[in-house]
Length: 254
Image (cartoon, rainbow, N blue to C red):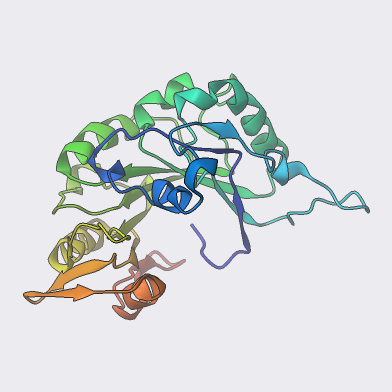
């Protein structure tokens, strides 16, 4: 997936329930806590920006331009059951905006086939689904299902990374990227840099693109634990220079 295209955030609904260890210190719950009683993180509500992808300007052109990447449902889970009554409309907007790429993550990949539209077929060509895992148990459960799904674009997101994981059984040519990140927030659990390197080595072995997108708040490296402030967690991950890409000629770009 290209990271150079213009990007937009679209959160058609907000709120989610916790389903696995990676949810314990969810950033959405943490952000909502700033608003006190005004925000109930476990309550799934439809947002005012629900129709954002198809909104138009006065000249009738779309407000979100063609070729954009639309990061979808990052304050909820696109497959959360409480949003079942709204999802068909969301799929319809994705279908209408076939000129944009929609990208969503999910911890509910086991619900995927029950949530697809009738015309899904082999998958919409403009939708990329990221299956999120945080430990080996969730990797084995979710990625076994993920491997069988009819999707044209797939990514694996290991975040928050809570332990070393073996992804080799699930890395094949259908995976367009593996992205790894530690946990943010005051209560964040430690991410071991060796775990990150281990997943990177697996991706290099299978020639699957790899990205280290976030260090997390606590990073263990060379026997020392580093406290990394939130505003530096993305830039410090980038400075590690671990990203692994595949060029147009099929050769690695190290």
